[in-house]
Length: 489
Image (cartoon, rainbow, N blue to C red; front, side, top):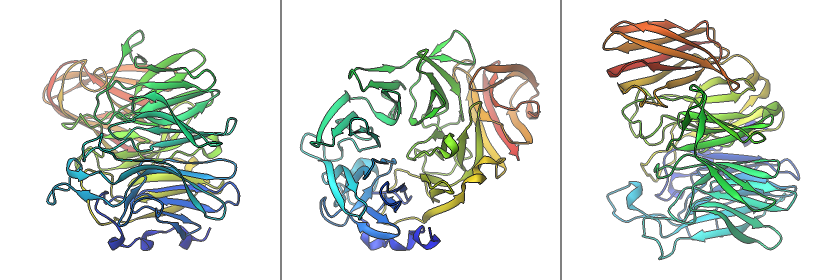
């Protein structure tokens, strides 16, 4: 690919974009299965490109100006088609002209959609759902948030997790284009097909339901939700939580589902579901976890290993110590490894030689605008993702009040993977002398658990003897604690 075909920033004009999206940019990508053409769905202004040429601007839905397209990464392909899903406002509007927040957006021209793209760049509308009078004017029917093609049955499964109605798991029989609602009224989000079953996370942005693993059996049509998990750091303890959901990946014969501050390892043959703290960052804004791995992103499997992006929290509109950095994570068989720090990463795809990353400096947030932000698509040689971490990492992991056994995940915070780093330290501030427990673990088991004595004030804890993931727990309540991880390759 020529670099000029990959950088799309200058193809988007501000005056083409309607009010109704954020400044951030989404680039979701696919290589067409028929001719390897590079398909990019630009999810801010509702445009689809093939090999750098604009092929579609949502002329089949509504009227201009338009905003949106997709902000979750709903893209997949069959033997002969690329499928793109998401939402579009055509046109967008405001219920109160001076208020640009989500609650005052006019959703009466908002559509959920699925389109197909053939090898010649012809785009057809496969399915859509428009607002109607069964909803208030600032509510919308569930956006299409993920797509999964089943080639055995020629069925397209799709999730609808973001919205107020018709949420859950759906499918379309491509032979007759009939849509069927399979799992109702749960925010089924990211999906992975394992054998004959679909495993999925729940989006759950309002924390109105328990975090869960949704399972749909494609053979007998039965479904279930697992809402209670074994807690890896306390054998015998069961745990449930209400957190935002992210991506789910397959690693060998297991699956790993990511939620804000946690990852759940699923053994489908033993029917075991084990929860580990993972990037559990505690601060005053704890109702919005700082990191939700795989939220609003694609995933890719270079050399068969999952690569996912971890974007900063979208619930915060002001910079804080806890939301200053995004991450790329390679999920290795024993423990995930941090690859590098990033901005907002949306799309991921590989042609076997490079991994293409859609990136933007602005993250998704509740502030709406007419204007696009800066962003582009970057081609990085695949081999670079299988080295030591590229950059130094500093993660602020705690800031605030600590309640023993309650704060974080059953009292634990951190869950930071150390693999590949040579310098590993924890800077921690406490208001009194206290013991702190350090647990090291991987995807198989807990390895070690040590006690550290902390003095009042700042302490520096050397972590050089730990190699996998580490989490921390104070042994008493604290009025104030601060903690930062410092990692050097």
